[in-house]
Length: 339
Picture 1: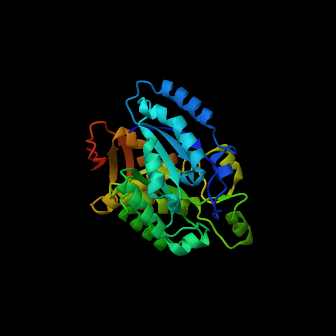
Picture 2 (picture 1 turned 90 degrees about the vertical axis):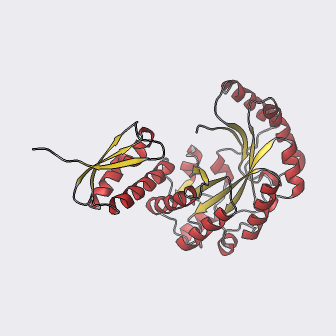
C-alpha cells in the first residue's frame, strides 16, 4: 500500500551519546534542525499536494533522539505539526528516539499532540554489541520502553542494524528473535555503513573493523526480512535513503543505492530455489509465472536471479501473469515441446 511521510530531520539534538556509526549531519544531509515555522510551512504545502489522497500519510520527526531534546523545543515542533493532524490533512505524527528517552510523562506529551507511532533505535539486542558501539542503553531498556509505548496505545516501531562491530550472524539472528518477541507493528533494517568522521571510520582505517560486503549484507538482510514477514511484522524500510551527502561521506560498507530492491530480490530467489528443490524440476526447461508487480524482484537486477538459478541447475524463464491470485505469488510449470 502506498504511504506518504512528510519527514523532518532533527540531527544530533538531544542525543547524549556518540555511537560508533553515527554522524547524523551526513546521514540526514542537514545541519540545522527545522524551526516551527518551517514545519508548519512544509506541512501546509504537503497537505495541499495530498488533498484527496486515498492512502495513509504522516508527519515524521526522524534523526537524533526526538524525545531527548529540550521539552519546550519538542513541544514547539509538535505544536507546529499538530493542527494538520487535527484537520485531517495527516493521519498522525511519527517520531524516532532512543530506548532510554521514553517515560510515561513523555508519552503523555506525545499523545497530547497527535503522535501515533514511536520508533525506537534498538539497533541490537546484544548488550556486548550495544556497549562496544557506545549506544549507552541495554536490551532491557528496549524491552521496557517498548512495553510503555504499547501500553500507552501507540504503534511501536523498532530499528535494527546489520553488521555492527562485535556482531556475528548468530547474534544478529538472536536480535531479530528478541525484536519479534516485542511484537512491533513495524521494523526498519539498516546495514552498517562506515561514514567519515565516526569511530567506525577510525576503526576501519586501523584495521580493527571489517564491514560486511554488499553481498553479505544483502544475504543476511534477506533472511531477516523473511523472518519478520513470516511473523506478520511489516518491514517498512531497508537501508538508508541514498542522500548525496551520505554517498559522498560513506567510505566503506555495503552502500548500494538500490539495496532494498536487492534484498527483496534475494528473498524471491531463495523462495524459488526452495520450491524448485522440493519438486522434480532438475534438468527441465521451466517457466515461472509471477504477478506483474513482482516481476522485477523475481527476475532480479540485471536478471541475476535467472543466472543464479541456472548455476544451481534450473533453466527458468520468468513471465508476468495478471491472473495469478494474490495469495499465490508464483507458479512453476514445465515447458514441453511437441514434435
